[in-house]
Amino acid sequence: MNISKGKRKGLEAIADRRGVIAALAIDQRSALRKLFAAATGIAADQIPREPLEQFKEAVSRILTPHASAILVDPEIGLSAGRQRAKNAGLLLAYEQTGYDKSVAGRLPRLLDGWSAQTLVTAGADGIKTLLYYSAFSAPGINDVKKDWVQRVGEECAAQDVPYFLELVAYHDEMDEKGREFAVLKPEVVTRGIEEFSKPRYLVDVLKVGVPANMAFVGSRDGQNTNAVYTREVAKEHFRRAAAAAGKPFIYLSEGVSNEMFSDTLELAAEARANFSGVLCGRATWKDGVPIFAAGGLSALEDWLANQGVKNIQRVNALLGSAKPWFSFYEMRDTSVSPQQLC
Image (tube, rainbow, N blue to C red; front, side, top):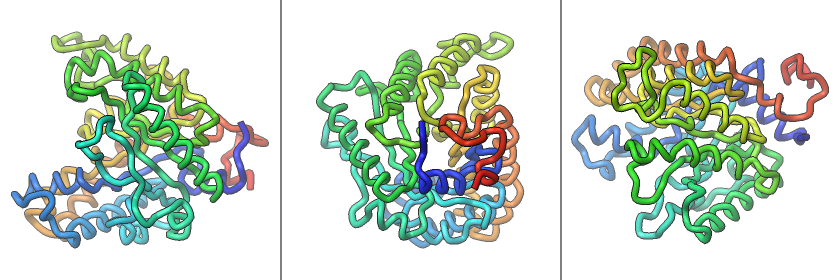
């Protein structure tokens, strides 16, 4: 595959010198409000805007020196984006948070008043949308989603800006954290990767959950009696999903703990999955929310400078086996970093 000059420039800004994406995600809106609600006892929809902005700004300011990029939303995250370290690229989210529960299919919606053009004007090196997707959903639902992704891909291509598609695996009437969905998840993830690797969508990087629920992976000593898959079976799911990718793909942390996400990356490395990095959010910073709620900004800053940095460094240390994004594209010389190719 070839890649345009503008998209290549954007990906170089988002990746590190090896071409690996070690990005920090804090584009959460409704999910962040829920974390604040749990920490404060205030209803999620009553959380003021100011503390959300302050939290995102602190995360950006203190953690982006250790990240290749940061993903924020343009609703309450632009000020955080402006406070990122000089080494970090900027990804901007283009979708509305959540989905309309009165409409079947968890259909995606773009942010009102924004476009790929205005996101680029706001400083985006890349644009991200989130899509709930299951190949097992009704064909009519999936046709709408496929057309939506293609339209966004065309819009990003017109601006010559990289398009990151985040795929969230789900299945109607199943708890995505439950055992029943854990059995189905490898197929849902793999088929989603396969579908949106197709050229028609103009996606440049896929952001995906891992193809196994780590809570149901057997332990090394075989003591997990609730396991759905052994470690060897789980590694085979990693390999199969990776083999389906026709575009660079990176893993998201799916809201798990830092420890569990670290275990996930270790398993991916054991499986030799050819992932190109991570876009890690809550596994890095979510434990700082109650710190902020109880002790204010200075307490949060202290926690981020200590535990937050340790969290992100722990993830970064597990990216040694990650493959550069440009290994999926035709480059003049893939033995050197893309910055050296300019």
